[in-house]
Length: 225
Image 1 (cartoon, rainbow, N blue to C red):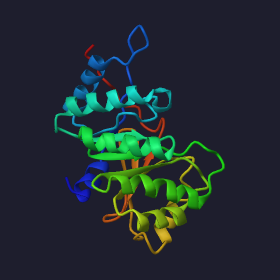
Image 2 (spheres, rainbow, N blue to C red):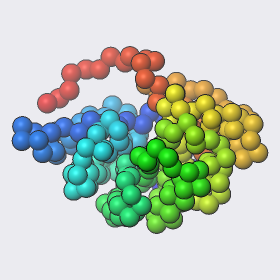
Image 3 (cartoon, helix red, strand yellow):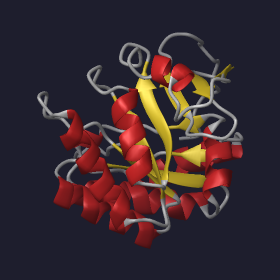
Image 4 (cartoon, helix red, strand yellow):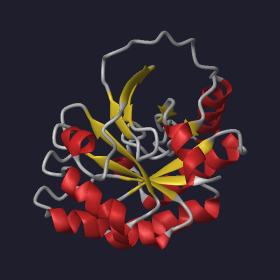
């Protein structure tokens, strides 16, 4: 799948499933597979195992690999798999390589957890991971208000496989103005609300996905388990 097609899919609803656990506290792979199947059957084109909603930071490395593998198997080519990865550079790079080998289409790099990261360090962290999997599209998860368009521009120039940015409504104030007025971003962008996601994107550049909590309250049917 081309990066352009991946960008197109990111302009729709990107689903981040919860991680189900059994009575002993282990990942319930069977239920997870049913959840992924239900999302895709409902029309979802991108599924993100190991996102924040999936309790990424509460999962052991083996559990995160399991969630990804279950997702890829359940998706069976019907939807793109955007694998959440993160932690230190070495761990994130290994997870990115596993995502590639397991059949994921893209990776989403979680925001580094250290509160005092520098702008240059942020760029280097993501560029190193992106370079390890040049064939995969890379989506950034930006929750640090200190990260602005300057860092995104530098990273975009260093890593051509960056195809999207996920941010929260509270942390995007330093990003949107640069996207709208900076030379790296075309001035035209349109707001597109779908389910619980708001997408601010240009027609040809990296999409900016803003998770908008409590903006819309879709009605869901009862799950099948």
